Image (cartoon, rainbow, N blue to C red; front, side, top):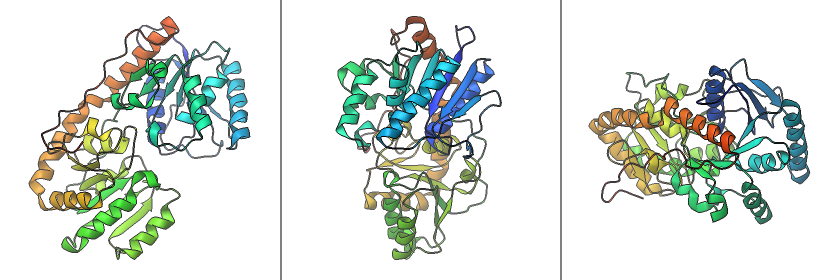
Length: 383
């Protein structure tokens, strides 16, 4: 961490499963431990729950459990406050919206600096209006709020917007690559929820499946929509052509069996899996949802953007990608080169700069780290 004496950084998470926020937390923990800073990770999950993204052995781990609901939120505030009183970190970095509200309450009067990280589209998250009002008020006392794209700034009131700093997700250096075999497999990855748009993807694949009998679709992940998606596979006549195998046993293991990656989300924050696919040299098709894909994909060069929730447009893009092997072979390397902008060493250095400024001033940094600019779109490219 640049220009800082050794310090204690605490990171707050909902859990330590397979999500994108959890991956960034693990990268930050490894980075700061390697710099010989003391790192504590505090999570609202159970001690026996699996850790999907490995944390350094030196990480102090506090798993607080706690139930949901109004009283559960208050319980989490007090549980977090007890940990902060015992550990006395210089700064708390909180991930995810509801955790950020809890962190803002728990740090009151503690002297611990607070950096909140938004990880999704604030306009699309389900929350009671009173919750949103409380968040707007409490965000004003954060020292900084990290968002992943400049476009998300419009979601916040002016008083909060002044505290925003844009830092995209670090995309891990590829450790898994597509095999040389032509598996003819389309892959998608994510939690099985309405947000991820896998119902749209199934509909699109059903439209083209008769034309391309050698191709299959695999959707990796778990979640509450599994039963509905399995029923849709049967209803669309896709049994034997579509697999839902659950979580990949290891992070990014799905890349080895993939020929084309699809992100079909209705909304995002900054989709890690899209960046991972691109970094590994896979051709990608992404729904141009708010927020993230347009900052990552230059349509026609590093992948293809299609309108979100447009089944026919996604089907057309899939058919064109399948038929045009030359385009796949051209886009894959271009995608990998484009992801150098989000290399861990570049992005994590910006986190270092942010914390140094927060701790030096106690307020929002006078000047935020420079934002990563979106690639220039070609005329006629979807927005």
